Length: 180
Image (tube, rainbow, N blue to C red; front, side, top):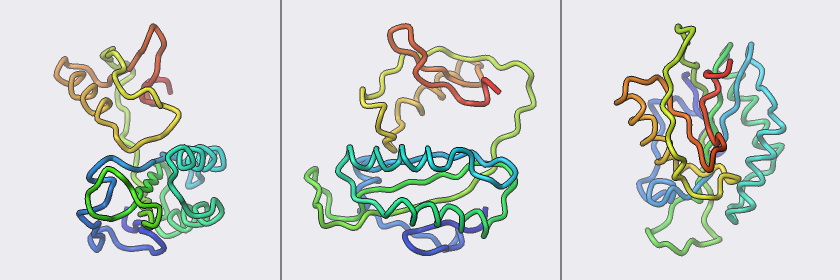
């Protein structure tokens, strides 16, 4: 899609520049949310914004007011005019010199964009089952998805379409297109 929400502005993708000292880049210090779009309408937007807000509170991450984020999402949809796809929102703690101890004075970085969903052409999918080795705070939608990245790579290396994560005989994560 053409326009991206960056902090309080809409910018064209090719004009976007994110500072190298953003804590999301250094530490994965941020949160995200993915919202499905059906016919240009966000699915369960309020529920997703609630989860985003709760994740921010758990990380001591000050974010914009919920209504402001909602308006940004709606503006992003209006500017890009998507039909189906997903909206990705990411909020990091912001830019500051690299240090594990974060400042509460740093301004968070907000990023939002829309992307089309990959089309599914198969009626069957091969899946790879992988133990979920991610951190135990899955109630926080952290931008650090290294466990997911490694599981997807392993699935592909074994000729599978997707990875399904499990922990203690409980399914912990699977791509939604597997179940649609």
